Length: 234
Image 1 (cartoon, rainbow, N blue to C red):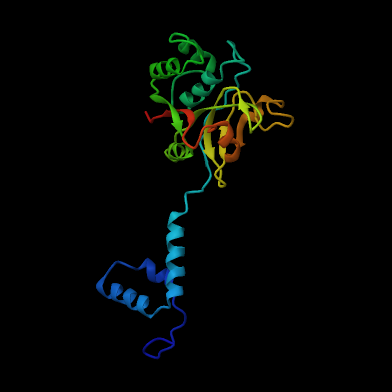
Image 2 (cartoon, rainbow, N blue to C red; image 1 turned 180 degrees about the vertical axis):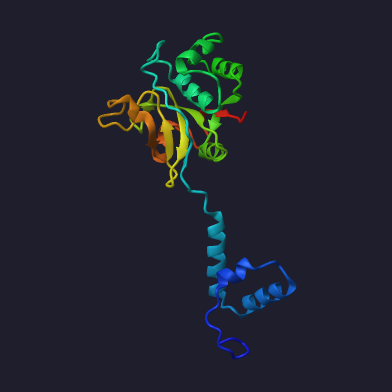
């Protein structure tokens, strides 16, 4: 029953709020509704409204980054994860390279494949701007992915989650709806049965690494302790 006694059916509040334009009569109606509502009703409404606004984006993102294995590299196949990872992103961003073998030759002009400064200079030569960091976190991954940019990160790929060791570079190419991360791992998959990297190398193509795993293997010293390379649009 409406205030004038006329039966008009239930109020569609979604439609009401869609037509809200902060007009004087609309504000007056909202003020009246606030005064007429029970405190618990208002508390529940505002809590749901606030929490809904705070929900982070959770849609799946998967960038179309090419996958390069490192184990088939012509040069130093067991230690060129950094070069293969950077080459994947460079090709995605439009660099005119045929693959990671060609890119390796450019890297060697500036230093070793494991040298992050050499990688920065090699990428710059082929028109790719990037920066190396040692203080990244999940928020940086999300921001970059949402901008359409992959990230190369350094993980501890050996040992247990409790005591991770090693050093390995991979590419983060996306994020699942559960906020785990889709990766191109040039050496295979950490998640292979029996301790990781025991199955076909192609298992690393688009492998989903859970956030819980990366917490240990990418952020072993805290939430902003991640090593990684950020890229910028050309």
